[in-house]
Length: 289
Image (cartoon, rainbow, N blue to C red; front, side, top):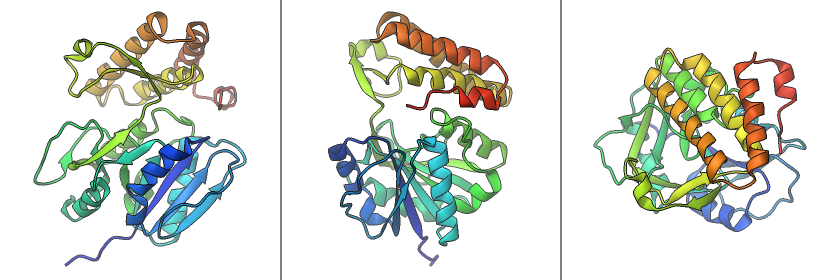
């Protein structure tokens, strides 16, 4: 019988809703051998129910990729083989994390990632199923594979970090897997409600479109354009979907979403940065709040 893998986890905080965070932690923290709590802004420590907790305080916002890389390096140094990466606004449904953890012994030896069904599609499978992409939240990262694939791309800062890592893993010959029996509830910012019939062609239930503050449009457009330039030829189907996504985001900004002027300005900056060279100047001029 294979040895039980040692699993650490990390949750990255940026001005969290503490009640929402507490609900999320209750769905997975007790199943970890160690939980890193990465505060990406000054925050007072508060009690967390987990076997072991290690706080990491960053005086500056280093972004999601920087936080994940720091936690990953610590987990490797402390002898863990897997790292669960969580957002502050995500929670497993029911015993979802136990389900995910239990599927590790069914994985292909060259698996880089194992994640839950974050779209709640109600599917099942006898073995973890290969997928093109996983979102960062709720995903188990195989740490020996991370050492071979390379770290999360800190130049992206936030949006697209998960897409980049999944595509890079696949190009390196590693597998990305989903275990449908594990389900995750993942908040994607605020919700603008719309009639459900507008989403009849979607593969999962939707009741509106999600959106963040206007500054996030900069990262959405800049990072997706950078990724399209990196991976568009190798993953043409993914590239078409991302182009369609950006067009929808532009349409929503023009017609539906609040703070239209600020949102369109952020999109313009993102387009210019995404189509220009990926330079240190472009990174230094990026908004981080």
